Amino acid sequence: MNLLFDTLTGVGAADAPFLERPDGSVITYGDLDALTGRWANALVQRGVKPGDRVAVQVEKSPENLILYLATVRAGAVFLPLNTAYTLSELFYFVSDAEPALIVCDPTVAPRVVEFGMTATLDATGQGSLADLAAASNPSFDTVARGPEDLAAICYTSGTTGRSKGAMLTHGNLTANARTLVKLWQFTAADVLIHALPIYHVHGLFVATNVIMAAGASMVFRARFDAAEVLSLMPRASSLMGVPTFYTRLLDQPGLTAQATAGMRLFISGSAPLLAETHREFEARTGQVILERYGMTETGMNTSNPYDGARVAGTVGPPLPDVSLRISDPETGAAVAIGEIGMIEVRGPNVFAGYWRMPEKTAAEFKPGGWFITGDLGKIDEAGYVHIVGRGKDLIITGGLNVYPKEVEAEIDALPGVVESAVIGLAHADFGEAVTAVIATGGKAGLTEEAVLAALAERLARFKQPKRVLFVDDLPRNAMGKVQKALLRETHAGLYGGS
Image (cartoon, rainbow, N blue to C red):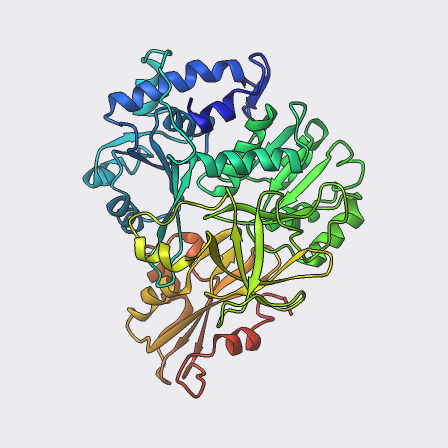
């Protein structure tokens, strides 16, 4: 038995739709056996063995999802990478994970080939790997994999700016998918509008896995377009998105109770949803957005209830199979109800550790399997969890993690920069906007345009600052530490927030 593959492909009826392409053509659950068999055979022909990593940096397409399933079926480890990563960033991930195969877009293949064995796949599902799969045998002996075997590695920001590979097992992903199917009451009758990226845990391991574990179907779109998503709602039942989805839907005049009448569930995650957005969406549609809380290392940890109060500004109680506690960040002792502390979680969803970082793994776990999330929060009298901040200055912009140290290192290397501080500021569309404050020591000459131009080739677009501000010196406390909290307070209204 291959735990994850069998869980995802064993529920849907053979003639039931799994995915509808933009052109209206459909991939059924019955089609998946032959398709994943061909792609798994293609991977094996390219030298992939059970346990090997397959790094994938390609645009979203149905074939990308087939590649994910085929990798799992072949007993290998799927390594999704954001398409915005630059070649220098890609080199780090490849050097660290040492994949047996790198699947990339044909346009960058000539430059990626020096990193290792490559195959290509473009946004239309064409490329050398697709050609090889089309010519391969549809029959494949699925590789047995159990709960402890790795299914994926997903990179997440590190406390020093160095990304860490979170090792996710078959057991982790299967447990989370099964729990969410029950909690959110997904059935084979559901149709999800899938407009999330699939290099990210949200779009790949929440949206896709939950749909498949329920035997449900998806209307597949390469990217989010508010007008198009609104037009699809009459024939769908659910949408999973980041807060940006909902702010942009609210900009659509056609967003009404009638337009959303056929939808039973709107889910938001990956970044905090403003209470204002929550209230306005309900006022316009009569639908209450369900907000939940998860992270790369754990999948989902908490969720507002399907039946019951979905409270704005909270992420609901812990999932049924997840334990969550709040501890004092300094002493580690439990804090009282309503008091703020560090969020720690334990459960079958919690990852196996960081790839080739045993010391970092040990530092992030406490006895008994408790994982220190790095998020600060509290639990109210009703058992709902409130996220109030992060202990590591992590910025979440558009649902993607940005660690300031990485951006600061690039800025500090620029001529004319004495020092920089990168902070996240409230932004109605992105949740938080990456913002750079640069100390120049009183010297003139450096401009915002010059800084942004210099960073364009060094950092993925989502990591690049939305604005660059200049000061003579950065504010510091008595210990000489830069006061980022003061910077955030000073510039809180930069993007129209408060």
